[in-house]
Image 1 (cartoon, helix red, strand yellow):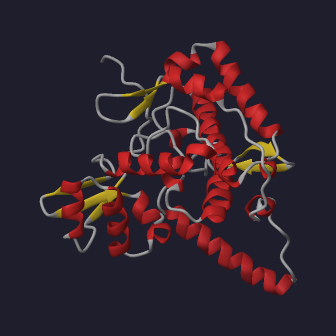
Image 2 (cartoon, one colour):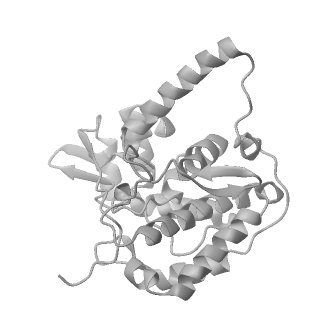
Amino acid sequence: MEPGLKTFSRRRLLIAGGLAGLAAGPARAAPTDRFTSGAHGSKVLDHSAFDALLETYARLAADGVVRVDYAGWAASPNDLRRLKRYLSELSRADPLSLTRAEQFAYWANLYNALTLDVVLAAFPVRSIRDIRPSLLAAGPWRQERITVSSASLSLDAIEHDILRRAWRDPRVHYAVNCASFSCPDLPRRAWRGASLQAALDEAARTYVNHPRAVRFEGDALVVSSIYRWYAEDFGSSDAAVIAHLARFARPPLAARLKASRRIARTTYDWSLNAVRTAG
């Protein structure tokens, strides 16, 4: 996940690439195309190693946000190695051998584990946006960081070129965590295909009913910038976004949303989702 200009920039690049392709002949298949074909197998992966790490370091804080004890994790060489081993296991796996639901779980877990690894390698840091592989980078999202089935992948590729493209489900945004306060919660248990649909709905409800995602300031509806950056995933219009939010909102909030016609503004806090310490 990147700041709000990313979607426009990606669309502009796609258009430019398409025009160039007309002049150059048939476009080559993207490295991620194999992962979005719909092909699947019957296997299921064991994510218990990730479960154990999340149980240890991901905590529901008093402010209703799941926060990560990065300081404690960074001070534990054994658990840093456990995360690396888990990522290595995912790298060696063949996603297309998994069931369709397990593939979603695989990519979401890979994104979240890789994001944690990126933050831990740079910790202490105030925001993930401060982790820049180059001076012009807006964060770590576009740097290729892992290889899966011979494809070198960035966080952006996992989220946008695989998850969003292959599933076209707005709940993708509740499955991946960008290590920021305003992001939907990091799950405290790895995603799994068997429980995926119910877990995605619960993640959506948890986020929508927290004020960092949706709130009213007087009569003005204020929502997370996610719903503006990726408006196309939620139906492209204010009315469609509001209908999506009302689907997951608890009754009092749902009633106010159903009476709303427009989004007044959006907001996003990029501060790290770290456990708060005294002082």
